[in-house]
Length: 104
Image 1 (tube, rainbow, N blue to C red):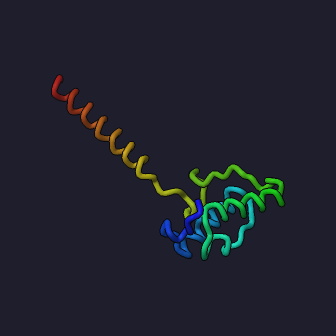
Image 2: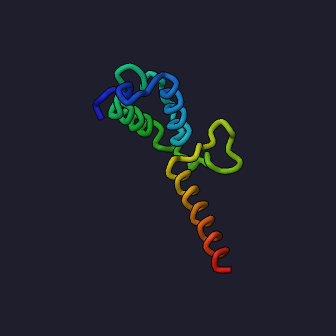
Image 3: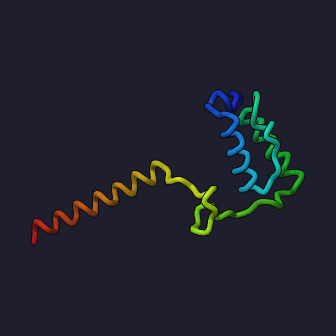
C-alpha cells in the first residue's frame, strides 16, 4: 500500500488510463499528479476519499463500459479468465460432439 505505483510498473500512460477509468466510474475529477511521482495506493485512495467527501459521492455512476453501445475506446478487452472459460466451453462442446458421433 505504501510502495510507489511505479514499483508495480505504472508508467505515465498507465497513470492517465487509471485516472480516467477512476474518474469515469466514480464521476470524480482527479489530478494526474495524484498518480505520478511517489504516489502510492494509499495516497491515491486518500485523494479519492477526499474528492468523494467534497462531491458527496454525487458522481457515482453505473457505467456500461462493457455493453454493445460503449465507445470502442473504452470497451473492455476479455480477461484471461474469460478467454480461458470460453476456450474450455468450446473444447467441452467439441468433445461432446465427438462423443456423440462415436455413438451414432
